[in-house]
Length: 405
Ligand SMILES: Nc1ncnc2c1ncn2[C@@H]1O[C@H](COP(=O)(O)OP(=O)(O)OP(=O)(O)O)[C@@H](O)[C@H]1O
Ligand SMILES: [Mg+2]
Image (cartoon, rainbow, N blue to C red; front, side, top):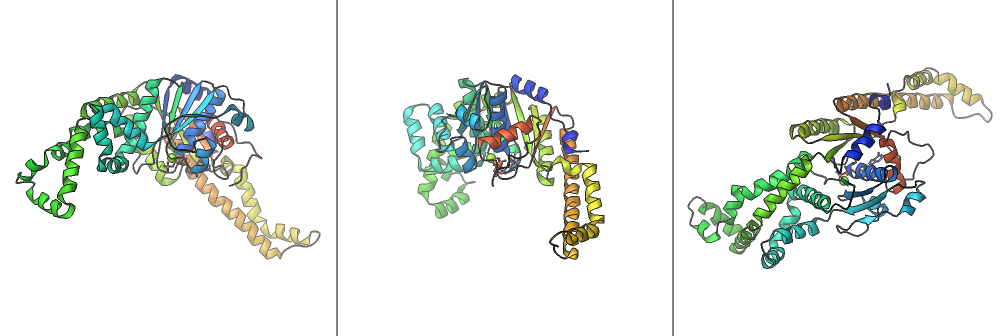
């Protein structure tokens, strides 16, 4: 059974899903193709269904960023010109916009929004620790992506937002980012950090720690840390309310998740975990994309028969080739090459069979599943994205449209 028939793409169900949603959040393990699939889905929706579609990417590969007109950094959305679609052989029904998540700009905007007044905002923004902490706060990246999504949704300028997510060590972190942000503000750690430095010194329990910290870090750094967290605390109310609103948007009926995975063992297992985690948190998983899968032809029984015949007849075939006009290489050499090709096909077939079993497991209990075959070369231009989009829509890849790596 071919992989395509194991998990048929259902264009009608996909169109229904996309029409019913305003937000699609792409999630999955690192490197599986979240950015590519999110951009391809956005491009396909703009081309096929119309409306204003925004793809919010995080750290796209340089060539993909260039293809989407995202040369410079910044949160500003750029429209992909209709001429770019036409050059790729497509007349778009709608409009496609792309934006890149700018962490620094987004953090600064959050501080300006939630600080009690301009003076406090300036103090936080100018605090020497702020820039370091905000950019390196790893959970912050996940939160900022969701926060920016919320802001764009509130603005209401687009019919559909397709959001890529940061390459996190643990894909589950993303789902919990808003509640973690709320927890952080009520955590004992933050409360402890914001107790004035002097009074902490006289606390017997923390004295040994402070004596060491003071010697290693210096009192100035400890003072800066305390100042920073005291300032940060002033934003507590705004941050907590906002994080709760972001969490509500993720759970909203208008939001769905797009789980992207490859069918290798580790990402496949993580995708199964992610699927369970989404269900546990009552987050809607609307679309599963199995990316970079091996071609369905590998699991075709006729192909296997041909490989076996090739292997069994390698000697005869090699002799036949050597006896042709102009001769040829030694029949033994040719026979070995033919046997290698047949053996290599069988190996790939085994991997493809395992992939299709995993795809079936992943797609069970699930509505819309799509498979995207491995595309030769990188997916780095609009034509490539539209081709990936077409396969998400269940179309077979067109032969003769290979791009150079
Ligand atoms: N179907 C495909 N065929 C061939 N190459 C692909 C395919 N999908 C993605 N790629 C390539 O795989 C690489 C990783 O893709 P991408 O950057 O989209 O992954 P990601 O999940 O966003 O990674 P990260 O977790 O680092 O953000 C890129 O070079 C991309 O061009
Ligand atoms: Mg990415």
